[in-house]
Length: 217
Image 1: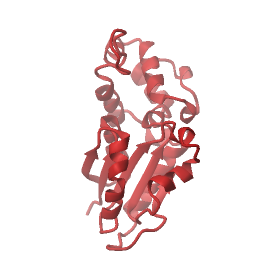
Image 2: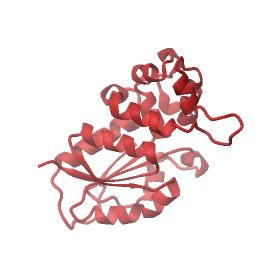
Image 3: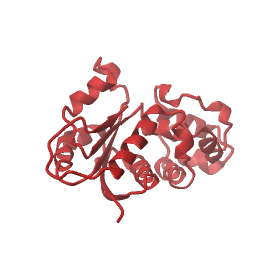
């Protein structure tokens, strides 16, 4: 019988990433909560963690953004601040600095999808200050007009991304993203995969208390 994992994420693209990771680890996404923002997700985090103490496996992904710098805290300290006691069946993951870095880590795949040169993509995408903005910049150089129109915002708008950004990148995630290759250039993604694989393969002890749980950078 396939293992089910409950999911909580910030937004639509994060949902696609989480679902694909769960399938990659040979499990099913049972229920997915898209919280429409980081603060909404963090407010609900302790509730998800409590639920993870009672038979339910959880994957929660939050973008690091620049919180480590803004709060003057290391990533482990920040994790401890957000969730001091992680339930054994909770996989709480921080994407450095956003899930877009995990996608850029598949350099060949994302370059082919966006129709740009792989040489334009850094070998260490987690070092990018704003991976989402970087993807939009790449899309502006695309040889495919629908990529430009869909992913690059109109200069007159105040939007950071184009109208089809999420749907196009979700298509990449679902059908083209090479997770195995991406792990080589995105340590926080590799950590998330290991966490999920352990979560899926480990028998859940119902009603157990908090512990170190499944975490990672």
